[in-house]
Length: 368
Image 1 (tube, rainbow, N blue to C red):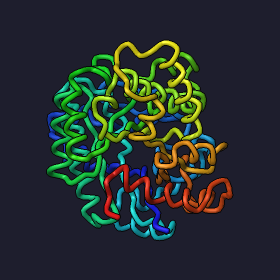
Image 2 (cartoon, helix red, strand yellow):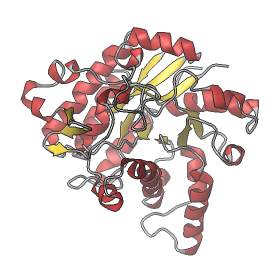
Image 3 (cartoon, one colour):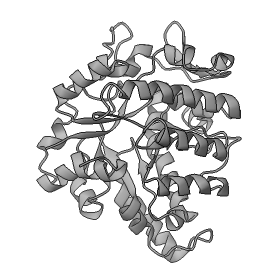
């Protein structure tokens, strides 16, 4: 069967921020600050929490903070080299890779409009050159600035019309100084994406260069605890936003992906949102359907492995689950990213084909 990686990554090389970024914004570029026993990410004047690992692990599958500091992480060849990426795709028998950035996950904490927009343009321009190596197999997803809804719309239009990207994405947090996801200022963006048949993905990433004070304070900078909670908690909050403020009701053709948080939470949490519609109602939205029905119609989540109750998820939301490798990040697996899902007996072959192919085609409007 054809396999589509619906959420892979590139790791931006230094030239993204030296050659593609307007020089007057160089001081805003995301970077690594190395200490004796740890490193921190920084972006602008914001310094993140300590990460006790080698910085190279961000592009080395299987190398995480659990690996000894003395080990030499082997950075995947496709992290910034498209020719190497195609070789690795062939090793995994993956036909198409949909690509998100890595350092791009750190820039949306920049709330000053001009540098925020410039950082997004630089990353998107470089990603377009990466994908141009083989546009049939390497699919770019554009990062949007979150400093102002108007800037997000402008960059979305550029990503679709000029760069040929198949989607755009933003972080899940409500970052201080930026508009809420349900702010009316985003209505033109939702309309543009709906009319242009372009999805939006909500993609988390814990790095400290974007505000994560709640998790840092709650877990006393314990990276593992923060990482475990941040991804699903933020995505549940975003699903709630899209439903309870009527975004999916007003834009029935808008497709939304909630990535890198698995799928097992979906039946439980959508049941909870349905229950709240019945018991309390949603005063900020005139809903014509249950929250779970909006999810079935318009929403997607990704899986990297076999999860508990996979069969239950596929029974309830057969058209909403896609495969993601997370290549080449340290908590991803390479080679062998597809092995568990290929071999499990928890799902049928028909559902396997949906996860690896059909649902990603629907999400990103890819050619069949």
